Each structure stands twice: as structure tokens, then as C-alpha cells.
Amino acid sequence: MIVRSPVPYILILAISGLLAFMPFFASGFQMAFAIGCLNYAVLATAWGLFSGPTRYVSLASVVFFGIGSYTVAVLGEVLPWPVILLISALIGGGVALIVGLATLRLAGIYFVIFTFGLSEMVRQLVTWYEVNVTRSIGRYIFLDITQPQIFWQLLGLLAVVLIGAVALQRSRLGFALRVIGGDETMARHFGLNPTFAKLGLFTASSAIMALAGAIMAPRWTYIDPAIAFNATLSFQVVIMALLGGMHRIYGPLLGAVLMSFLFEALGSQFPQAFSLLLGLVFIVIVYLLPNGIIGRIEELFALKRAVPQSTREGERT
Image 1 (tube, helix red, strand yellow):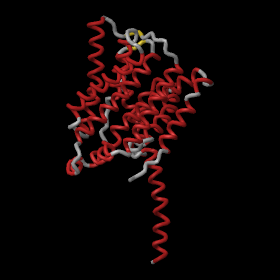
Image 2 (cartoon, one colour):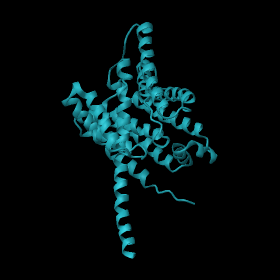
Image 3 (cartoon, helix red, strand yellow):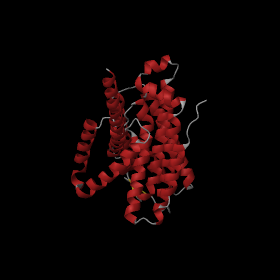
Image 4 (cartoon, helix red, strand yellow):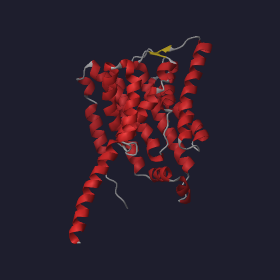
């Protein structure tokens, strides 16, 4: 029997416990930045749960994030907050289940194009509904939820996602997803069901993104389709995961932290050229770090180990 070390789980819980004290001494700006960083970390890690092992590049992150936000805008003053969060996750997961049944047989560029088109279609549909049915372009959110409460909820969600990611990597489903990402035909020969595995993880990942959108919604006070379904968010999530290393558990988390600092610098110093600079950053990451920072570090360590090995073999001859 293989004994799995509990160290990763203990570290996640310990670091989360320490970070939980941050609202007691952080300034308003620091709290705002930390909340944004946690939000990106949740989204990037959830994206990596599905896209990392399967190698499906999804640009639909903003769809589920926006669904969670709009669920709060519609039900915020009607239902208790825990019930709203549950409904947000269920709606996000339900939409992902429907979308997944229709699209997860696609692969490569076709899946990327579909998910990008889906985000734009949903934004246009919500805009049409708001203008023609509610006769308003947006909604106000008045909830008595403070910044520390948002911080703690996002921190708890991130901890749960990271623990789930570690457990997934060690499970049979995680192995199945890695095989599927390498070769679906081979996966079928092993008796695995690629469609079921991809669909289950895509649904779970999307529900997490919807939860993040719901938790973040009270920060805005006012929400409209352009805010909730801003396509830039999907590209930001992909950039973060690629920078850290999308095929590693902690890669998207590392990328989210680093890119949060970069986004803050670019947004404050070059607000008019933010989108252009974001595109340049994307190109540089793909060109120079195709396997992310963690992947690059692993390559360097592998190279360092290989050099002494080849030296010893040369001495024997």
C-alpha cells in the first residue's frame, strides 16, 4: 500500500491560517490588492485543474465568473448569503455541464475558438436581456459584506481548491486526465472514459470560478455585462497559468501572484496601454517560458543532475 504524505495539506492549511490574520493589520490598499490577488489565484488554479492535465485551453473563465457575479446581483437581497453562494456554484456547474456535453469532443484550436465565442455570446445575451427586459443596463448590489469577509472567503476557497488539486493529482482520476492529455486513444485502450473525466473536472472547475465571481460581486456595488463578462479576464487567467506552469499544481498560483503585481504596475503607470502591454507579456511568456517558471526550474535542475552523470561516465571510459 502506498502511503501518501500529508505534508502538502498541512502546509496549505498552515499558510492559509497565517494569511487569515492579514485583515487585522493591513491597510485599505493592501487589502484591496490582496483580494484581487486571491481572486486571480482562485481562477488560475481552478483553470489549471482542468486545462493543466487535459491540455484544453479554455477562454470561458469569464463566463462562469460573470454567472456568479450576476447571481449575486439578482438574488443578493432575496436569499441568505450561503444560499446565494451555493446557487452560484450550481448554476455555474450546470452551465459547464451543458457546454461540456456539447464541446468537449472538440480539441485544439476548435475548443479555444468555441470558448472565446461562448464568452462573447453570453455577454451579448445578458446585455440584450438587461436592455429589453429589465430596461436597465446594469444592477446595484447593496450587501453588508466587508473587505475582510471577502478576503477570508476567497482565502478559504483557495485553500479548498489547492487541497483538491493535490488530492486529484494523487488519485486515479488525476492519472486518467494526464493520460488523456497525452493521448486520448491510448487512454481508451487503458479502459478510461475521457469524456466522463473531462466533463466532471470541467464542471467542478467552472463551479469554483462561479463561486469566485459571487464572492467578488459585493466589492463592485454596481455591475453590468461589460464588467462581469470582460473577456480580458479569461486571457489574464491563461497568462497567469502559463507563466507559473499550467501542468504543475502550484504553477497557476505562482503565476497569479507574480502577474497581480505586474497588472498593478501596468494599470497604474500605463492605463491607456494596458491591453497592448498585456498582449506583449503574453507573447514573451509563450516564447521564453513555454513550460512556465516551475517547468523551467525543473529543466535546469534536470540539466544540473545530468552533467555530473555524464562526467562520471566519461571518467569510467
